[in-house]
Image 1 (cartoon, rainbow, N blue to C red):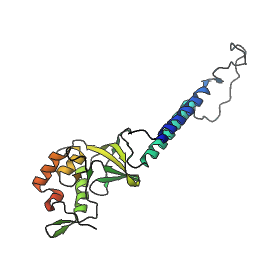
Image 2 (cartoon, helix red, strand yellow):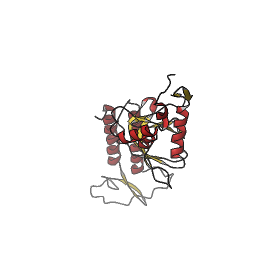
Image 3 (cartoon, rainbow, N blue to C red):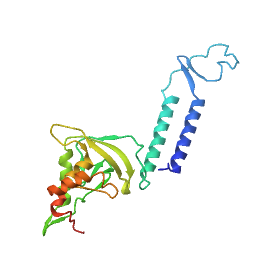
Image 4 (cartoon, rainbow, N blue to C red):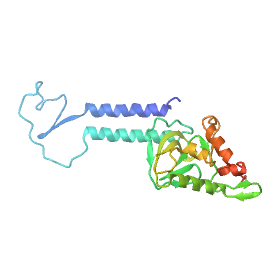
Length: 231
């Protein structure tokens, strides 16, 4: 996916800030500071009387610290702007950890502070949705949410951002590490195999084995053939 124009502009501005800081960088000594490219008394060879000591004052950020903080602010602005673009590719962002306790909002999503993280490539029932098993109604949405909670309880999720979603949500691929006898691996594959999620269009081949296993066992929503009642 092509990098959006605003990303190029922000990065260009960041390079200018770093260059300006580098040109104005000072050499700090125990007796004070000397700007690079100048002598202590204005002579070409730097000869002359030593610079008198400079009284110590409140310590402020040096050029390197200021540059690092500027870079952090600019990168944060780039990331925030990327997240606002529908379906923007976020794969270049670093992975992150979601430590326990995890707060699931439905069968495929978590909340991290004010941000919603959704498992990419799959879809499942929302928390309030109801399904049919023959003529019997059952709260498949709440059970899917409980299934995700039970699957991840007491363990961290390690996630790689993939794309920006509506409502400032982030689609991500997440994994669970092995612990005791609990299932481990890609959470999306685990949920499809348990019948609580289905692959999104275009991802069917990747989840074919998980899907067939869940159908054969009548697991999760397959016990009623994934018949979700319309609101």
